[in-house]
Length: 345
Image 1: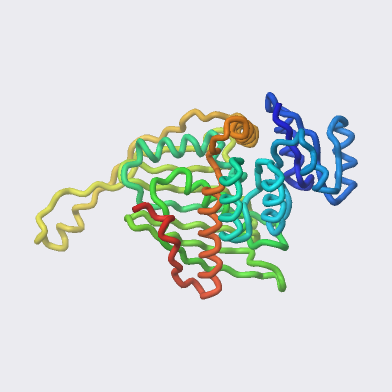
Image 2: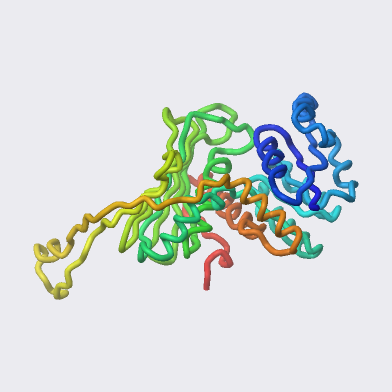
């Protein structure tokens, strides 16, 4: 039986508790939150769970093997490090930390103690994104572009920008499904509420190959859009997370190039490009709840000492991109190089 403590019972904490309850071999012993009115609601639904506003009570309980942290980003590092030093594995809400240095220190501490660090990149556990990864690897050919839009009206965050809130999803998906990692990033953004972080941002990711990637995130849009377009030399894909059934659509469409002599006339060069318009198909997807699958994997990793799909290193790669994008934004879109170890040799 794996004992769990959940830290934070605000927006995401209730989902963690509910899903941990459904994982076989798990016992939720504690839930901690500084707002006692939230804990009172918890007590009504889960009377067997102990509640506290003191994190140390969880750290000192030998029944607790792992903690799940669903608190503001600024608190992630301190809470996770305390848990690791107390011998507890850690599941952390996205992004894993507020800086790359903090993420690196968590990974080092976990490795030194033989503990597990997982970051809540929920989307990579969805049936849609798993299928997307499979299609990209098998059917699309050379990837030309990755273009993602994630916009809605709110929720405005006071401690992080829209980039650190929404773009995390797209960056974690890209990290999981693409065979290449970016070498540099450029970004622009704007805050339309005085004294608050940016509420709209555009990120461009640069690769050593012909792939280009673009992410648009926005808290100030009149409609909610969650759509990604991926173009390849063989086929193209549209991933629409708001579609109730056909979230993934694969199009047998693209361009074809006729072989021509290098010294062909300009008119003939233009005629080299042809267009292919084939069928569209929507594959069947696994519809099980992603968070439940993610937490089941985390518990299995705690028991076996293996690494989860979204481990500390995956969280670190995303935070490095976000830090570089933040630096670029402060320099009005200047291209910022990423650490060399992000780019495969």
